[in-house]
Image 1 (cartoon, rainbow, N blue to C red):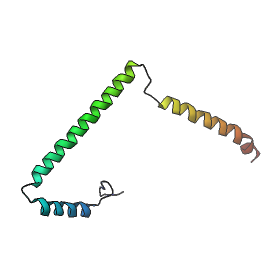
Image 2 (tube, rainbow, N blue to C red):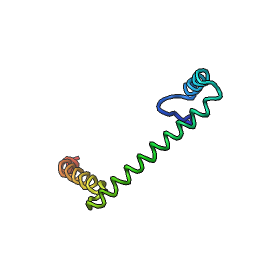
Image 3 (cartoon, helix red, strand yellow):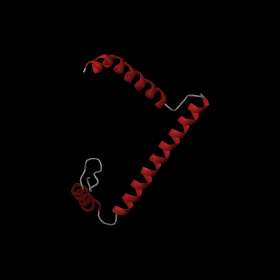
Image 4 (cartoon, one colour):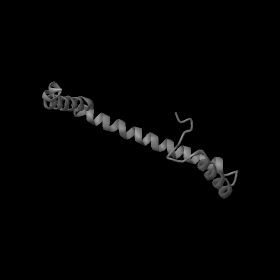
Length: 95
């Protein structure tokens, strides 16, 4: 098991190097301000995404559309299994 977390295929050493460059470019007093701004932006994007998801879900529920597509997928898988069993049935019996 990998004990090291990899974020977007960037290792810890590369993240450290990027942080060092950011520290050199912007200075130690600006880094917390930049991090706060990035945190707020990420939160706004997350909130907007959740709002869009909830609106889509509400619209789908108003239209009485079934959100559970796993039923259809399960039916198709069962059909394929039956077809494979029908085809391989005689072959299995010969051996």
